Image (tube, rainbow, N blue to C red):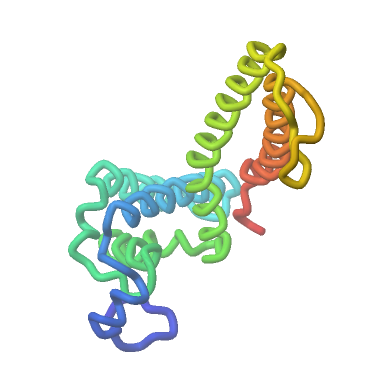
Length: 198
């Protein structure tokens, strides 16, 4: 029986699909990559702090690196009874023994792991969003300059209210986008903080 936390018997196949989705699809493999990277950093902290002996850390780091190099193939045929990290940890305990594989649970909670993995997974889409928003902002400013002399009406309640230029209108959109970008960058600073140990 795999480590399932409080659950003592396996879920039915249909319940497993509802709770955990397909076994180890690409999304799950991406998550395992992040889990393993967080664990590598955590193990180095345990070693540097003297909490766990170097021999066990070295052995566990090598086992994690092998799994990464194999793209987690040894885990693909297994069923995640209660989440990927337990499947992954159980495999390391099974292959390296409890004294080595069990080290991952030292001074780290599941909440720490989940929060850190989430932040790591958000970084790439966040950076893409910022990059595309900056591109749009630059385009808006270039077009605002180009159309600075193109007269158009602005509307209030669906009626033409006063004259302006298309360039001025685009500059207003660019300013609103800049304000939103500033808020996004402020929120994004939190992704640089590591919640491990919190």
